[in-house]
Amino acid sequence: MRNTSPTVRASPVKVSIVVPTHNTGTTVLTGLRSFLGQTMPRTDFEVLYVDDGSTDDTVALLEAEVAAQEAESVVRVIRIANSGWPGKPRNIGMDAARGEFVHFVDDDDWLAPEALERLWARAHETGADIVVGRMAGHGRRAPRALFEKPLAAADLRTGRELLASMTVHKLFRSSFLRENELRFAEGQVRLEDHMFTLRAYLLTSRVATVHDYTCYHWVRHPGEDHNISYGTIEPGPYVDSIRRVLAILDAPDTRVAPGRHRYRLAANWYGKKALARLSGQGFLDQPGPRRAEWLDAVGALAAEMPPEADAALTTRLRIVAALARHRELQPLVEHAQFEAGVDHRPRVRSAARKDGRLTVRCETRLVRRKGKGTSTAPLVFSRAGRRRLLRLPPRVAAVPGAREAADFTKAVQRSNVRGLLRHREGGTVLSVPLDHRVVEVPARDGGAAAETVARVARAARRMRLPARLTSRLPGTARTQETRTKEEGTQEEADSYSLSFETEFTVDPSTADNGKPLAPGTWDLQLQLGCGGWRFARPLRGYSIEVPADEPPRRRARREGPAGRRPALAAGRG
Image (cartoon, rainbow, N blue to C red; front, side):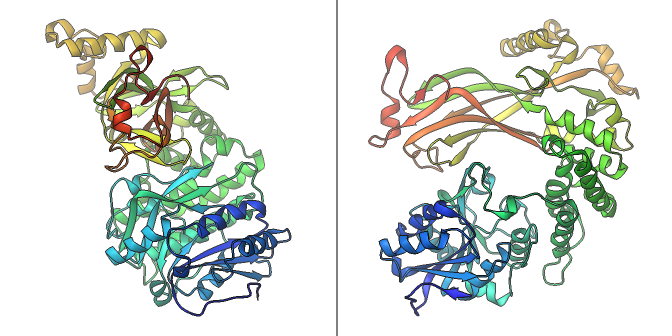
């Protein structure tokens, strides 16, 4: 190990930023410049780069930039022999850190100007051992639900909100890390950051968030190849890493008692990290032999899990669990083909502006894409008694347990629709509060006819027509024949698709947790979550423009051409 920095301060600092690097190249400078541009005084923090045996000019680029910014007393570069993974460099950075807190940052990522100041202040305000700053994703999806409200003492033993952020891009109290001997697994170990973060979460009941300021910018560059963790994943070792994560739930100091909460925690890895590898386009993109390897590895894990674990999975992953236990490849491939086309298609019904606020009424429907084109067909459900069953491909439905697992009754009841605002320039995504309702559209009418039926049903409800006039309208009430079927024990009753209707209002002056939206373009999106599927799709043609030199509310009141206000930009974004 070699320290290439000529000047090292001996006094403690508030925060130590630890960054592992390996053949990062010029993109490493984005992060460095963001650190040196912090509002926290340079005397209050340090930056530790631990270079894992780079063979390019990464270290030279860092040293040149440090010299140019006269930051030798702030930045240290430590060079080590290549270990092949971020775990060892992070451990070395922790050991060398002099900060009251340590913040881990990846070599491509960067911090917003006030990040350190706000994170440190939040830690002192709450006494938290860990502080998670709001994140924005660039080329990847960042967690969002975790930052919808302020958290001062989140505890993974009693709640699950922290599962949304399992990476190590957080502020950790140094004494907490030392006292609990928290270390990263070294060597080429997948999910080493999840192992570290899960142990940390379970060893404290004091995790706070900075929910109203985007602190961390999480980046993945197109065609990125210097990060070894983006390489080919070997199924066997990967599933072994999942077992290591799950074992933390049984370790003496981090044990979570058996029960519903424990299985819900385990589902984050058993479901989202293991079973998800057997589903959708990601599975189809694997060559034939690799698909079989994934089925062998994940199928073995599924066989080890108790039945209670499946109950904690989302509905879509319960189907995959049944197929994984069956251990036959072809039904799994057919289901992956089926799932790869599942999506939703939002449509704006109306948009109105009043007092600077924008109100949007829209609907969306779960659909399946047909082939590689843009045409879609509604996703079909069947009613069996009081249950809503997803209609699966025949070979998939024939697998023991698959059809029973496709019960979407509770998933539809718990479905979630959100309005989203995405900052085109900065990547921040904000949620907009809304309510929604689910409407059944008879599938027998198909295509355009089904849409006509849905429109008629909606109109009838708005007009509040007497029941004697609407009782025979499809979508407004079920006929006596259907009611009789539901009371019986028949295998299936009517088939239908699901439409989700909602309305939300955006006030640019308060949309960011009570604060005005930042300057730039905010694109409107609609997110649908149902049964483990979650998609955010743009409301094309709808965006909010916030100029830098003018408050949003004042600007939104101005009339533009043809009655438009500049707050809403028409046309495709």
